Picture 1 (cartoon, rainbow, N blue to C red):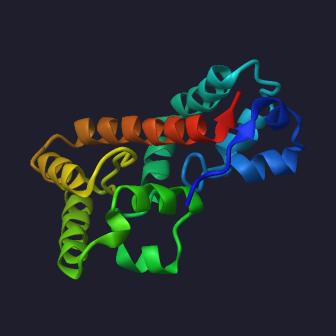
Picture 2: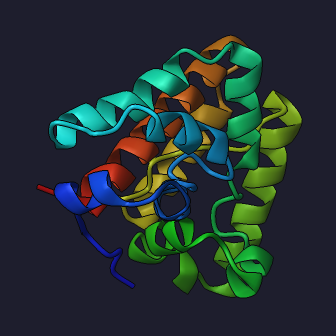
Length: 174
């Protein structure tokens, strides 16, 4: 499932509703960031558009960033995969092989997700694009070994930024 690319000139000419509809899930279920970014148009180039979205996120307080982290789906959550992730999350998990897990792998991810949330009170977040299942599992286990909650929140914030940046890079065509 390939994400549709959009020309920057066309993006700048979208009406507000279409812009928000097209980019409303760059930050998982956080349309308010897109609503603010929409007011920054026209964007001079791809980098300026990406920068606008990221600066809005960066300016949020930690509580709002944590709320965005908590909106991300668990990786390899079989129920959510079957019932529907956002198009962007579905595409990312599919490319990394997470949609093709065996039953044992789904169960392992369920346990890892549960342990991570119990330990840090946030879901495990990783920009899975360009990573395979084994790399994801290794990172998951390494991060579970940490005991520094603040460090894990910072890693997760950086991963949310990276996910948004990768999504925008894929969608925007100059």
